Length: 508
Ligand SMILES: Cc1cc2nc3c(=O)[nH]c(=O)nc-3n(C[C@H](O)[C@H](O)[C@H](O)COP(=O)(O)OP(=O)(O)OC[C@H]3O[C@@H](n4cnc5c(N)ncnc54)[C@H](O)[C@@H]3O)c2cc1C
Image (cartoon, rainbow, N blue to C red; front, side, top):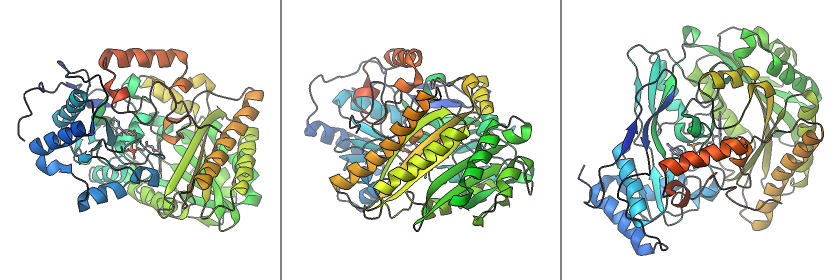
């Protein structure tokens, strides 16, 4: 690598080293010494200068418009709204010092950037940027298992499937994402719901970063505790149920969510409500970390007759691949349905709120059924008491979740559609927001409402940091002021869930 220009000081990298719990080990801070700050608005020439500068020093790591690799980069986002953005150039740093160089360059030229790990943001801007610098983390793809096999360092350019494939060589696993293509970076900084969340808690990063999103720096790698699955296998799969089984299903979800036995703690459940053709269905993703043929904790679910069933003893990679098939088959996740929207809310868990949310989802879905190619879905998950306790035991987080309030019902609405017309887009978003609003009103009237909104499932109309509570928000702002006094990660990385409020103020 060539040396950087002289106006740039040596990059400052904080290196925490391995800790007993999962943590950030490489972290590029914005608070570099001697910033060259422009106080006026940046001009296009300055971005061209920033891209030229990067090209000069990191030639093969910069992509430019009107080239095939640049085009490929843009198509590799989950949502069409992100694909539509055209960055001035794309930079792929190869290590933490190059990440710090990029931050310093952005600070010096006042030119904005966006950082992409897996690219699963659901609106325009989380990880791509019009006429700014898109930072692809794909070269930060190291996976290094410690000699005693207890820890693994994971570069944030990996997706979860590559992590699981590598770890299976060591007969190990980690509590990461459940879908293969989701990025290590975005999922971890948003919180990190996994198959093993009840025993492992949410992702264990530093306090501010556990839920702090992209507000504090660019994380280059994380260290996670490894999990040793018996014979490197688990139990899991998808069971599909028809509408006449929905109330039994919600009862099973509530019972499993409240189960505090060891067996219950090894279990995880997700219920996806949507349509198969025009028929209402629920696809339940069920897992248990022991490779038992019929885990006792799952007996209630297994006693409800299913239309289809893929559950079996299998490896984590096989389970993750199963969800890739579900991702393709389920409405709202189909690769060909490219415009995306989502939203989220959290409530105390009981069967009444589960049933109300399910009915509200289908009621709102009916209102947009005439939209060409629309595929809406509601995803129900449970944050168990054990999961919240495990998170606290590993050092807590900024999300303001108290184990005493658990178990919690985590609602995620999402939809895909094909026509990029203003009317279709606003009707779909309005339907998703109505599910959130109506269910939240119903819950609040009964004392079941929670302020917490899960960043990883949130829509652009939601103020995630405010939902963490006033004290946590104040603490996060104090931490940001201390480590990022020039507010580089607020001003120059402007999108996603910032400390100041929702990305878009378009609530219906
Ligand atoms: C099909 C599907 C399945 C999912 N499954 C799960 C699941 O099992 N559990 C769960 O918790 N969530 C899940 N999610 C939600 C997912 O975690 C979020 O969408 C997450 O933001 C995706 O991260 P990404 O890296 O793929 O996306 P990106 O768009 O690349 O990143 C999201 C945000 O994080 C920032 N970011 C990424 N990496 C870094 C970094 N290293 N440093 C600083 N900022 C960074 C980006 O700038 C961006 O603002 C799923 C989403 C989809 C679409």
